[in-house]
Length: 305
Ligand code: ASP
Image (cartoon, rainbow, N blue to C red; front, side):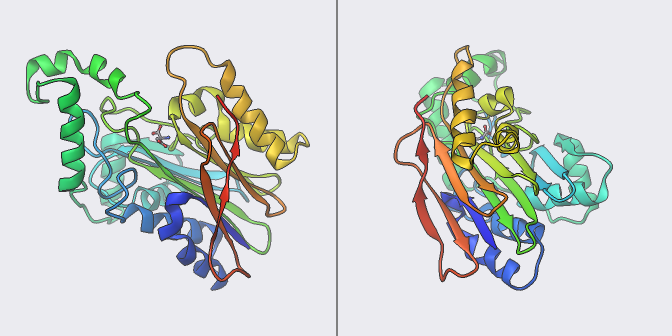
């Protein structure tokens, strides 16, 4: 049994492993691990205290995929709910749909009995305000601001600005795999923007027969190249996990246009081997097996953009 996660999953990986050790499902393990990251006030890229969009609203994206059935549940641009991964799980279990967004996702979360919470912390608000002040002295309430939002959102694509996401993959002793992703997306994004995280095949894919992969980074790239699915497909076609990661990262090099930036993938093959890749040097990921006392940190393959 193994749990693999992006490095910011360190606050939840031990608890996720405890779920597997206790006989819980891979879905339970992934949702548990991600839940701790979503509640972490020091992580401004996921859940509570995530950085807001251009107009100061925290909009969250999440997805969950079951590698046994290829069932998936996803929510996008949902506001006011601390655990979008739990709402995504309910989409998987309760709805005939895969993805619901915005007001519909909030309505569904309310119907499922999830508590509402104001997710914008003072610290996140201050970071948002400072970033906004670099670009304009207008405020979101002003008509002139509304006329310039497209331009301001383009500035948010600056790779130096803070972003992030959490990825969790779990495999149980029977070879069942689940993969989950949760994020507040790009800070200062255009309201309503979805990234790769709630999109199956882009930011998340799991198939017991071959393995799983999940992304962090500039989601628009993973959406255009179907990056998470590509890693799994390359394994299906016979590549090793590391070769599949290299091939999926190399696919991104053919993306034209101005929005080519950071990309990171964590992955697992069907035999329970973890690996990860990044187009930034020195990046790490974490994993924990059931026979390990604690998680280990490992360097990602570096594949320059
Ligand atoms: N992939 C996320 C998104 O595009 C952000 C990130 O991981 O930095 O929304």
